Length: 452
Image (tube, rainbow, N blue to C red; front, top):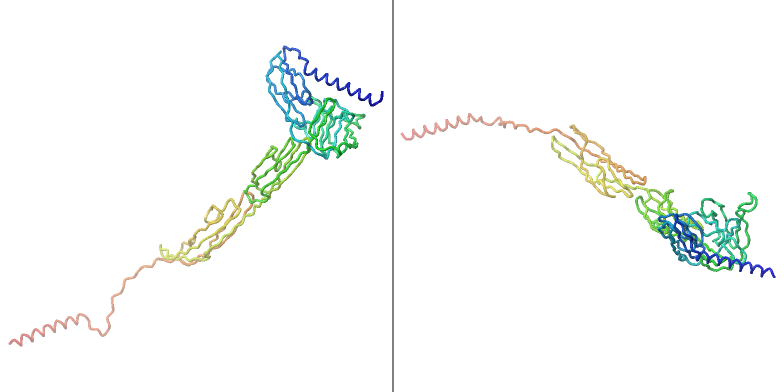
């Protein structure tokens, strides 16, 4: 018999055994148990891994012996949507559930490389770039054969962190970085030879990678398996890359084929959804970072929002010199001037002698009011200073001077008017009166003589 026939015979026997085992898994009834309940979990695809209460149990359909009570059963397989069901287990009773997963994601294109794992148990769990279930790509028996019915893990060319654990995840069998090169097989001998040789990676040509076109993410037969991991892609954008203090900007991001997506700034997490929008109001120039990680790689993107905290102010007087005159308690003259101000990119505005102001501009009428209260001339200079600040650390000041001149005078008291002074040639008033009397008497005497 030729070598080819021998290989074919071995393959047929192996396939028959696998088929018998699969049938037995689905047809053999479980034994009754008084203490625990039994749950038959049928999974599709057949290589899917079963978790119970967030702990891995095994791949393929199986009977679970569970303590009475509620349990959460989750089934994972790369390239499919995970499925979760809650079951209420009764002691000594049997129940059956089917977990048929739905495919997720479309075909994947190269360039590719291949990871081949040797030297670990076939049921060992394999993770790329993380150890949570979302980074699970399969078990070692799906990626350890390059003969006839191949079992292969195909990934985008690049660098990865590889984790191989036992099925209880209580022990790490092997972990470390591995670089995958385009159209090459990276063969990891996880437990081979001496301690120095353990974990050795050997590269060999992989011509099949050059011939492959787009392939679906998971395909398995009775003795073959092909897992094609999709690359992670991610984008991050800020709609406004330059803002003033307290002016908002909107971040938008998206990530495909990522198991974990985080948006951070200054080492603080802002979001962890695969896609989203977020309004931010940075107080200083800030770099926002997006990290998208999945079995197909780790992608980082960043977007910087520059914050201008510059405050600009202006302060003007319509009349830099005014007059003030006060006589006694009465202000005879009190000049005025208009004080005009502006403040841009400011949250707080104050002017000495006036107080806190609102808005970004305004004006106020100032009356000449000297500090001096005593009598005498006035010659004073009053200073007005504007100070504007913002919460981003910016500030600005301007100063103007108002010159006040004038005087404060005592109250003037009115004096009595003196009697009029007669001229020296004038006849005194008593003499005139006497002459008048004499004249009247003489006239009366003449009238009497005439009557005689």
